[in-house]
Image 1 (cartoon, one colour):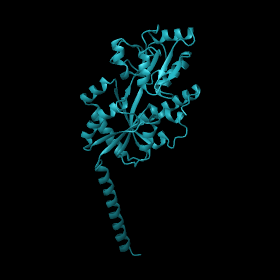
Image 2: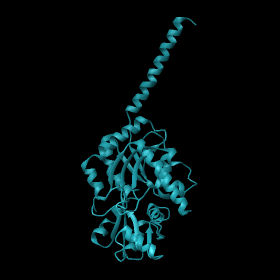
Image 3: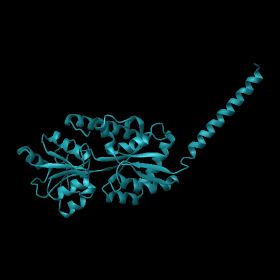
Image 4: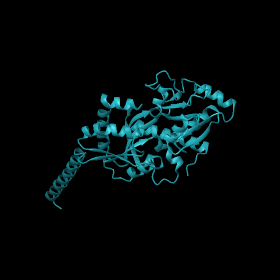
Length: 327
């Protein structure tokens, strides 16, 4: 092979590589060129759905493409997570993830996908602090008083939840293990039924996202004993957190994030994070979320991945130690 032939082949190879690189750059630069879909694993009107629907239009403005919100409830958001995990990793199908997604592997050992492996973090979006609320007839007014009451008499109070294995259930088990109490657990098929019986006095307590009970607390039909989260709730600034009340370990507010199928290009994830930051910084969206007691906590992918790992280990330990079963 002559030197001239080698030069010709080298030039052709470089030309092919240049075309390939250019095509790849063009493809990345054109994202997005069609509508996006955010899959929510809970029904319309729930906290995560409110967040997704508030975020969707603002995200659409920044991306220049429609953002469709799809509700796919079932198995504590596992059906939605599985659908996204099996989707093409191109940034067009995303999951509105929640704390439930890191709890589910311990509750549903037969899942056909691995949340931490098959879905990559885009960003932590927000947190929704929870409250421990009680029927007004309960003698306790604070978490410490509840502990004293529950330790002094077995079966003195029962807490409702929206179902076995839900975060509202796990908060109760965390309370029992942290304080050495044995509050009875009464699972319901959904939060609305649990709240109805709490208001009627058929159960005494409920651990629940603040947005679902704030009107009742302000009306006096329920009383709030403490805030579950790292800081006090803006709507109830006088109500201490559990840590301030002397009970550690209740800094685990319900969080919401955005995840994409594993293999999604980093350039796409970076673009999504950029537009999420713009959207969540807008005063109007902050106001909509604040009205639902949703606090913006935009966090990049790496620390969000660390939170997923930390919470996954934490809740798995609790599920095992409490012997919680859903199947």
